[in-house]
Length: 479
Image (cartoon, rainbow, N blue to C red; front, side):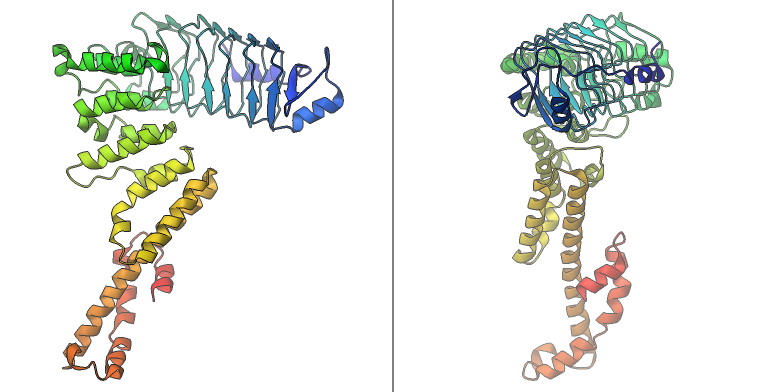
């Protein structure tokens, strides 16, 4: 059984960094060891280009390199030894070359790995390889034959994993993967000690671990479209898109599937949910599903999430997000809250600024179009452009808040302007003055405007117009 404590015991042992790395495109020309100056330079760099002739990364090659953000690995690389990137908190993504056939124990343990690209040809994954990282998605290549314990232990943000059908799930493989929602197992597979324990989302509807295992083994029984959407990345490279699309069309057109294509699996997911969580995003597949099952775009799974929510969680391509937004608004017969504002405010959804702007535009489209002044609409649009330019979540959140506040302010100004006209006119008519009869005496009109009662009405009416806004700030900006 693997434990986090055992892994910590090994963290203190760090060997000398791999001498075949090149820093900032400058090759380190040392055969056996790296000088102290070169080590200091390496530890201060954010990007590393590994020497093209390198065939392995040595034990602890980049361990605890806190500033490392990007690295380019050569095609000749075959082995990544244990602890190679352990503790590299700034390393968010990496592409593993297709010639790599083994990744050692704790190679990426406690790194900042947000996404990983594992290629076919990989044979072995050691213990705790990706444990305690913020990985969202994982696709285990079909070529992997050996997998150690605790591979994804404590990957608390992992929401989806694709597995080609392993016969055995090692101990603690997904233990403490609180966010895990999308996973399927082979029917004859078995699981080691607590391999699916503490998976909070799964245990909500499948509290017993044995029941959980059985449900995932039979998840796609009688649901071939679901199965295709889950396993489609194993049907060939991305260049085989037409073949995959044709296969999907063929399954949907079959008589047996006509009655089942809109069904939900044991997790309440439609094929569209599964596709939105795929490690390989293929727009034509979405279009086929939406053509045959348009209502799936607004169907919620057992946790109340739409396919749109999943696509945002994994930072799907912009064209996928746009398609789901367009089809959602088109399919809704009555106004429905898509939860867009919640998506925008969730710090766990680290999508691009361009995606944030797109979501914000669709979320506020009707409100923008209803603004009376072109200058106001232009001002809101400029604010959204600033959202698109900001990829840091905290700063982007402030800009989103500013856009929504500005939009509310303009709406409030319009509302209070209308109220003022109504009170102004009512006060004049109540005293026997007709607005049309007093154009020659503007002083009377101005007198009634000042004393029409709007100053008393606005503070009492605004709370009902904007219950969630700060009343005092709105009054300051609209009076």
